[in-house]
Length: 60
Image (cartoon, rainbow, N blue to C red; front, top):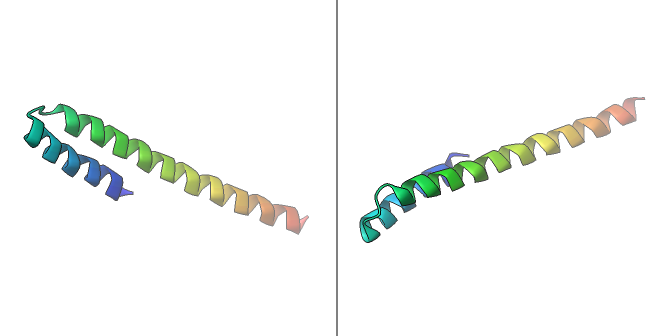
């Protein structure tokens, strides 16, 4: 979950140094990395709920 955020920060620093746009690329890419991480957490939770829901139906 930390890889997209860390990748956004490091990529943003690199782009900001090359283009001289400090701090915009870091901010934007960090937010994008956080969004990807939150989406990954959402997918894991949804998958866990689906698997638990299937277990409840079998026990009835």
